[in-house]
Length: 351
View: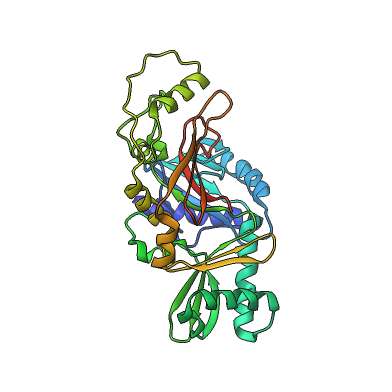
C-alpha cells in the first residue's frame, strides 16, 4: 500500500513542477527513506535544465499547490531540509505518512565548471582540438603512464552515491570522481575536478554525534573519537560551546590524548582515496596528479599537528591545522545548516 502511495506522490509532484523546469529525481521516482530522518519519505526535485535556476519559482508554485490540497496535513516550508545540508524543502503528512520534498537549486560555480569541462573533454577526445584541454590531458598522461596508452572515446558526468562508508580505499576513485572517461576497451578512468576555489577534497562523517541536543559533549561518540585522534582537548571544545551558550555547568574532566599518527594516516587515506586523477584549475595553469598508492602515501604519511583552534564567543567552528612535507591541511568541524553544534567535517588543502 505504501509503495502505491509513494508512486502516486511522485507522479503528482512531476505533474506540478515540470512546468517550472523541475522533475522528481529519475533515480528515485517513488522517493526513498529520508537521508537523516528515516521516519519520512524523501523526494528530491531537481532542475531539468541545470543552468536555468528556477528554484524560487518552483518554491512559490509548490506553496500554492500544496496548501490548496485538502488531503495534505501540516504543510511546512523548511529553509533547510532536515534531510539536506543546503537545500530547502516542503514537509507534509498524507494518509498518515510523512514526506519531505527537497528542492535542489541550480548548479553553483563549481558544478557549472564541471558540466563545461565534461563537454569540453568529450569534444576533445572526438576531435583532438582545444589547446587548453590538450594541456590537461598531457599532464594526466605524464602523471600516469598507463593512461597515456589508453584510447579515450568519451567523457560523462558521474552520477550516483558519494558515500565512502564500506568502500575499499582502492575502489574510492569511482565514488570520488566527478567525471568518467571511457576508453575503447571499456575501461573507466575517474577525474576529481576542482575549480580555482575548490580546496575542499573530502567530507567525513561523525561530526553530528559529538553533542546531544542539550549541548553535552559525548566523549565516546564517533565525532569525539575523530577529534581525539588529532589530540584535540575535548574539555576546551565543551568550554567553548558553553561560553557561546552562556551555560554554567560543572563538567567532568576528560583526559587529553596525544595525536595518533597511525590513525591520522588511516583517516587521510580514506579522505583522499585512490585510483583517480586529481585535476584542479589554479590561478595560473592546472594542478594534476594520479592518485595511486605512491601518491597517497606521500599525502597521508608523517602528518603533524600545527595548531588547533577551539570554539569561542566569536566562533562555533573547530579547526585543525596540520601538514607534512607535501601538503598543508585544514580540517573544519562546523554546522552546515546554520545551527550551533557541528554536523559536518571538511578536509581542505591550503595550497
